[in-house]
Amino acid sequence: MRRLTISLGVLLALIGAWTLYQRGCDRKLSDIDITGGAITVRNQTSEDWKNVRIWVNDYYSGTASEIRAGSFVREPVSRFVASQGQTLKSAAPITSVVVLGTTASGAPLRVAFGKPAWY
Image (cartoon, rainbow, N blue to C red):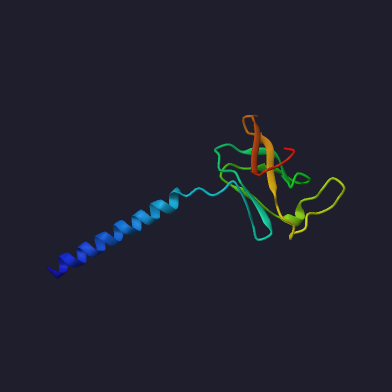
């Protein structure tokens, strides 16, 4: 009887662990994440992104020649620069981020966070 109780407990523990594991795997990360004074852009598609330009608060931008499928780019906020050379301060509130570029098949790409006014 004791062996049956232990086996049943182990079985229930394995089922619980498997359920938690499956729930964790189903969670999708956000395409654009702003944490720790940095902006992370994730390409969660099956195509590479080319000629990528990242616009922050409509005026500050940064570029990446490519973000491969399934990978990401993470840059500190201070690396984004306006047209006249001003840099974005890490304490500044981020109201919008827009990612523009093309996919490997040539289709235009636009991923947005917040409410951009221009892009």
